[in-house]
Length: 283
Length: 324
View 1 (cartoon, chains in turn brown, orange):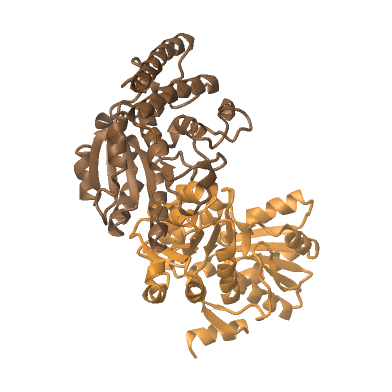
View 2 (tube, helix red, strand yellow):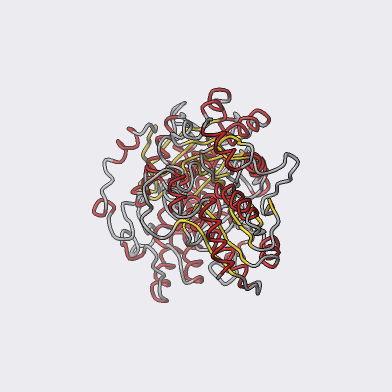
């Protein structure tokens, strides 16, 4: 099992792979990928009971990425976990490729086709209900962006999740406070968000969504309360890891030019080197 | 004479039950046989005649309240985990409010939900256009990976419900709530995608779907009395359309009339027109459905009569077309 230092190293490497992928594909939701990659890292390397060889197991944990536009981060993590060869990432967004710019089930490891916002949570509620009906042990995790919380379907599904006491459901919100137009609180205010979710019946926790140890601690202690759906508000920074991309809405689906790419890679390489040194020092 | 027996007498057919009731009873039987059969309702168990199902099999019902997007999303999630899901809601709300969920969560993701549009077409009558679904076939026809089945009578309904439960693809079923005459012999065989010929005819042929089929059958009988040979095909599956049956019918008659409880745009009629034209069949052809206008106020029966979707209207239309 990977410890926090090893997970941090993975995150640093994932960030580099994401940027490389986006540069090669010429498309991608760059800053949202960088905001949620630590969450995906912890899910796939520590929390989810799922692996390529058990993906058909009816008792596997489900992960449905509602913020489908951050698919590049998901592709990188799934490739690293061995769901498909890393070389296939070279085909992302190419003519005829299964690797579309949003998640599809044609890619091994992906549970549902997402990309239109506000769809992941209702589908997750359905899967969690099926688990409850059959008293199966699997859990259902879903990752939502904060911008997509304006979609009413999220709140409809939240009512159902609470009504049926779905404690096998874990909702993670990538709370980066930024959407394509600008700050979420300027576009359509969400705060007080924790109170809203609590009032809708979730047991809510908040953590630093880039602190892998905090993410592990939170996600390994689900359900937060028996008989209630769990909701983790992961506070993140959109564009995390590349200084000039952080908190800048223009990087929502911005693709770096040569100069920007070189500058970003210098930062990401340095982060990887730093993490590698930490892991080496610890060994 | 009761209204039911009078109607049956008019048609010369045995009167059956509403397709809605046949659906609910079939679903209850399926639910007893297989505990993976799950019904999802959006405060629609009463409208769907599913209170009996909910009473007897409460663990196989998911109630989401008045929330159709949620209904379809949850249905997709349940199906993804192996359940045989029937998502039941008035057709008007199910296929408009939740269209994106149908497109992405059900069809694109390949979750084999059976979407059940109850009180379809103008079944809600005078409640008006908010409650009518004259767009549903058109909207769903251009979404890949959903079969569209519109049963005409009780036999087609129970057959379609059972076929949908076993179908590996998503299916949209739509029907109304008025009693329907029995159109088929009990030993008839039903398959999604295969049209059913009710009557052969060499002058005109009606290709009808859903609750208009019995009207077309009555018109064909009236035409026969006048010496006009009119055939009737129940095109219960609007997608995938039975091309062979359609082309065969068109080649064997002098005129072809499609009939549907749907807008004349984008439904059965235009689907048939495309097949006929591309199949090189030239025939006298009319599409009968609800015109592109603010629908007149009235009961389903009154609306049908107003727009000529009645035995009299269809008889007249066939006569005009043959004499044109």
